[in-house]
Length: 103
Ligand SMILES: [Zn+2]
Image (cartoon, rainbow, N blue to C red; front, side, top):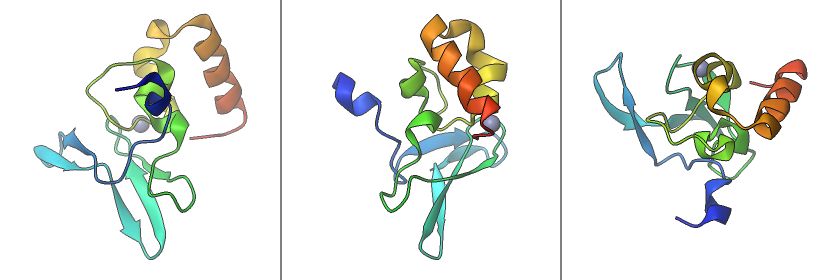
């Protein structure tokens, strides 16, 4: 995978392991014309990036430089589970995004 593509949000067709359902599920679902994504850790609902069928970049663990099992992560879970693994720069972005109330 090229570095440029790592920063793009995860597409809806991507699958991740769902502990509750015990299998691989699509990372999100459609409600009418809107797409929503599910945090791979807490199962929180996350709005997608508008019209692209993708999660927001910030909900892509690769955006944070994290190579982890989850394909989609909310910012609270990035902080709770992986804050120590972030570079100081990414930790700064995370702090800023959380302060703005982003998910
Ligand atoms: Zn979460």
